[in-house]
Length: 152
Image 1 (spheres, rainbow, N blue to C red):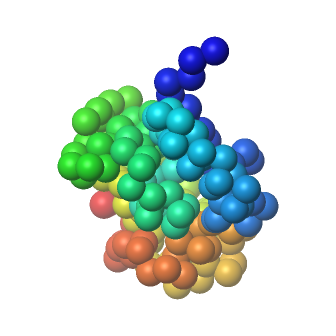
Image 2: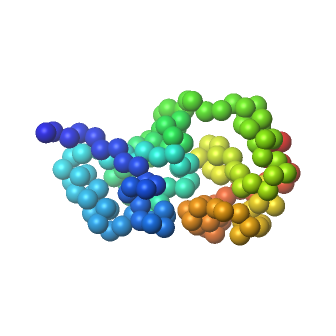
């Protein structure tokens, strides 16, 4: 069999239990695939800014599929080469309004970044948040906004 492309997910598959880092064994396997001429493409529901650190540093993974297929990025040029299937801002605002005042963790992913209400961002410990979201916030890459997400 002549494998040309390998698409791989993160959560529940390639990542360790912490859902942040890829094991050295999995990274070795991916690098070996690249050495054999196989194009390796991470494909995930995450926003690009939440990719594992090893993937962000790895230049051999030229294309990234993020946001459940809504964005494809060419890492050599840092250009978004496909964008589609996303909610409109109006649809996103309508969904956010359903959660307002319910003390439910919520975020908006837009243009590869994550946006949180400042109140949620400042009290993340009160919410049942996945480890990789806590890691993301601790790295300081999130964007806290004043007011409600639905107004964003």
